Image 1 (cartoon, rainbow, N blue to C red):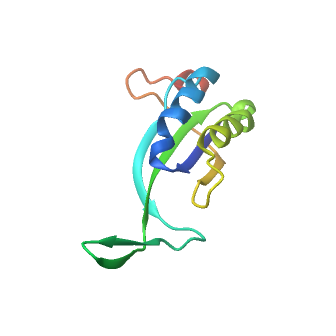
Image 2 (cartoon, rainbow, N blue to C red; image 1 turned 120 degrees about the vertical axis):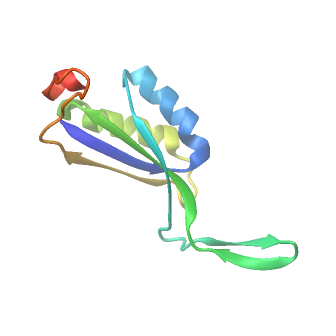
Length: 112
């Protein structure tokens, strides 16, 4: 199994969710996040005063999947989240050794 983590722009969440549902993903976790990459934030103007926004708002999407589906799901996320502009985010996968469904005690792939 793999844990896929995607950090995306907040307004792309609906597109990413729809694409994942079409692929057959049954569940995901979404958290608010903030950070910066190469763009190092940006400047905004509020009531005539310019100020720097160091941490850009993002969403962190996490999905547990079978290892053989990981690359396809990463491709689905990248295509759905992509705007072609700086700050689109990142997607990565890490191996998962153990998964347990708390309600039933099921482990492994049955717990997904």
